[in-house]
Image 1 (tube, chains in turn red, yellow):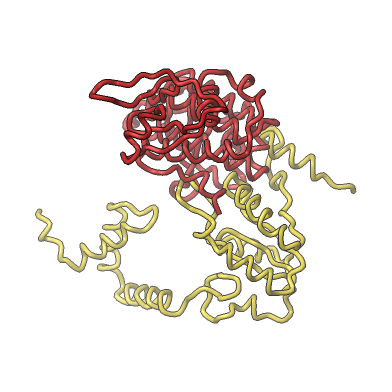
Image 2 (cartoon, each protein chain N blue to C red):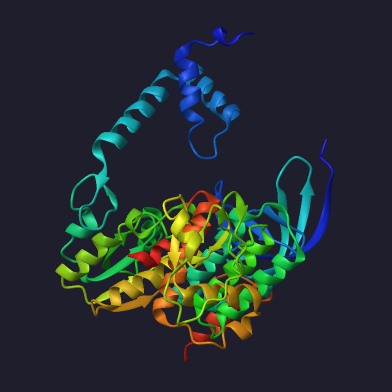
Length: 262
Length: 201
């Protein structure tokens, strides 16, 4: 007896894909409600009518046939927005893979509308003129907040005499002493707490400029954050500290940006 | 019926079959028992074929295609144009191009496409070997024939970055509509690319 199936219409963003069986692909789809893996049959054949509609990062309307205790199968697919720039430009394509990887590693199953809108807007900006590295740093801050890992950049997360320090952090370019970043406690440290916690796991020095950038990236919307000039040295520092911060919480280093290392 | 009812040599074969892609435990058992019951020389021929596969094949030291002779017949053919190198993901892609009978150059097989999420990086593919080959030999054109998919395009974009610094001409296979397809079902990207690369008649 055929198992009961029902059709369901969904709009989703293709985050990742992997080959499955002879000519099928598993598509990782982010919809406004969830992150799901669906099966697209025969899409690796050139004659497939669905193939071009399920490319990475495109926003696609799919008709899913839901089978209990089995894969949801894509029975129709029609691309709403195809992100061709994220296929052709190597650097943008790399950052787009990183964005998708973070979503996949931090979220599973049910997700929120905010996440969907964030990813959609990020891909759209990434495809246009936005400076990819700055946009990616902004995205990281927003994503961590949605994932429940919102770092505290506004006040010190250090401890003194078994009490939280909570010193408000107002970094200025004239500051002589470095601040700190503490991945384990989930935020920034004042200079005194950095000195005290320096040798602990996940603690590193942070320049005043990098800290004020982290505060801005977390609190402001993208357009506002992008209106300031990000000096190259700070950009490099931010990339490094966030790479370590995220790796600490994921317990693995994201792989997508590794390709830019060498 | 306990597990002991099936002799270890059969269980072992079933186990081995089920490690193949697309073969589940049921198919594996069916294949094993077919070989057991079938004409005895089928199993022996299969065994010999498998042994030959392992013992006699290797990668061509020039193009990394699977071959019995090194260099492979294509790389060793003086009638081929060795200045034109066509880069493909898999040996099967090369066979598909050979079937067209339209390409007289040589190949380079990457053995995959970049996919950082699945842990496939440049060092896992034959990219450094391709670079060395271009730097050393008289290569005048590199034809990128990676698949027209996100992964294939990403690999091509990466290769362009690396090869352009050497200064060799790089081209990409044309992308557009497949024969026998219907315009109505074509996606926007394919149609856009077909429009971009339209030709004067």
